[in-house]
Length: 147
Image (tube, rainbow, N blue to C red; front, top):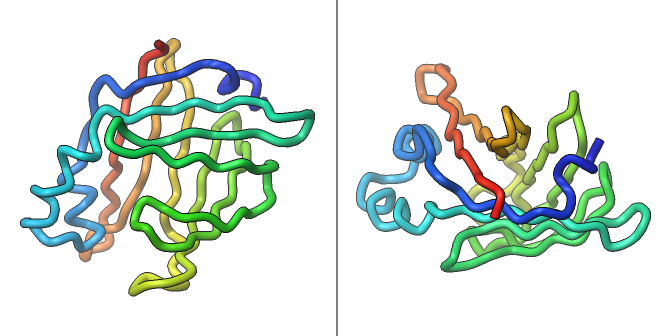
């Protein structure tokens, strides 16, 4: 099932609900303004290292993260916040699932940072949900094209 994601580079064309997502995550307005531009022009690349091991490169032109992993086996690595995360990649219902558990900092123990990657008519789409204070869900949705 991972084959659909392997071997191509993708770059973000557009996104929906970034500000709403950051608001739901409790990020203050000033900080949202500072970082929103840095969170655009995303990048995705997944390659096979060997039969069971993969390397994924994610990020933006300002900074990328590389993670080498086996599906369903957590890896400990630095997240975008500069702090250690336990990151698990899996395939569920044809979607690539990326789940982060925060291991340090003010979000230690939180494990609700989940991104689902899927294809829709040749476009790679990522969806990252967050709950607003009223319990309503908002989804940061990104659209990627193949390079």
